[in-house]
Image (cartoon, rainbow over all chains, first blue to last red; front, side, top):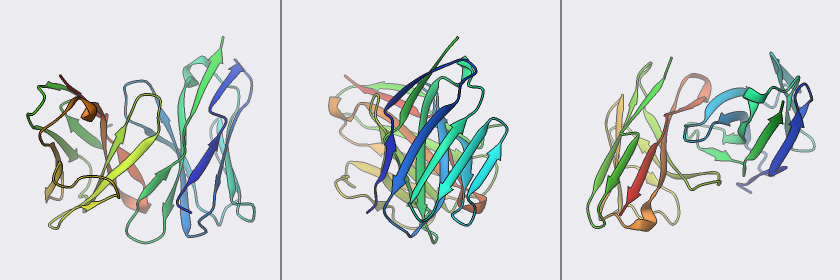
Length: 113
Length: 114
């Protein structure tokens, strides 16, 4: 119930294309869903986040789509660039003050020039 | 700018010795900090939740006597790996809970035990 399942494990996209990464969860107590971007040897950096009362959130080229009934959410990267090549993690946080962040398995994105 | 400072970024220690990793919150007071561990090409696994002024809460399977956590102030938490062994070699990352329940991460600390 604490798991967040992420797919695909790896993704190759041509420059200018759309990258789509999907996540699914079981625990309906999760109430905050961030996405993190991690470059090799670095800590993860917050990219964009959404709460379950919103179905979509867009920040620049990054969009989160959230389907509460299906317990799924996805990250769309529009006009993907080689600089977007990194590992992306979806995550979910339980409500309350624990703020414990549960990560998905990660997706390694490669954007080809 | 950086919200979380982690030090050292890389450390090599001999088997059997202890090593301390510091995590500092730069922008706000953090009553809660988190310690994660990441093996190559794997996800981040939560080790423990560090609470200022009280004992840390460890995840199942994490040895609290081996991974000592101290959160003595609102801006500093430390992780001490005691009696380190080669299997403890990993990437250790701290996170702090900020406004809106957002968690910000440090740059991580590479530990190599030889």
